[in-house]
Length: 147
Image 1 (cartoon, rainbow, N blue to C red):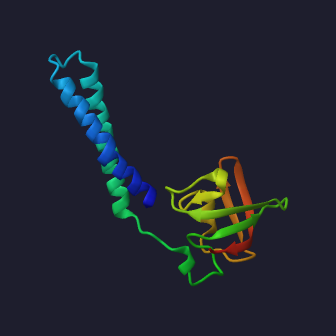
Image 2: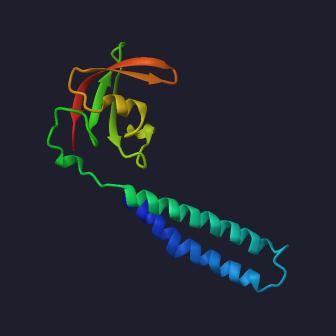
């Protein structure tokens, strides 16, 4: 939520006013049909307005969840750090986060990712089958941890 709010504030408070100033200056130069600053500025302003509307919708729907307040720590829910093992005993540790926070390289998977959906509600020792682009794979939950 903080990252979305920071992006929204930056667009609204910094980028958009700069573009408005450029468009106003370019409009005062006369012929707008061949004025690159004016045309690019208007296009960029529309892009910013679209992104602002998207961010406003996302922030309106978001609910901040504190994983440290999770009562049932025996099952996988939002914010859990889960260690899973496949059939070859390869261990992977992932943390289930919001879709806006996901970063597979850092081991953070989005709440709506196929693996996260399969792990929801799982307990220690549970087997979960996941359909991935490379085929179907079965994982066993070997560890659940919350911050």
